[in-house]
Image (cartoon, rainbow, N blue to C red):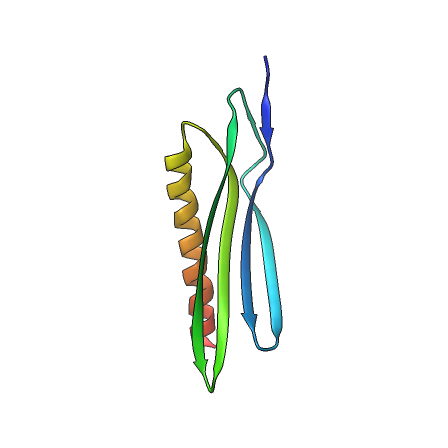
Length: 97
């Protein structure tokens, strides 16, 4: 039987200010083996925060992960929840600085 293999999900959090860019990438979940074709689902959110004195911090969070074609909506909701939580986490760190 034919098996489809997809890479492990990858999440990326980028925080950029006037001094440069810091990027943290983390693996999310395990590699997937499936008997059905898989899609690569991606969700990305970002925001720019004015930190005063003409300075801004730009935050970008994305998550790309495999999803069965019949599970795209469920996986999208999970990915959106993860991305939104990470964005709010980093946003809180920036505002607290």
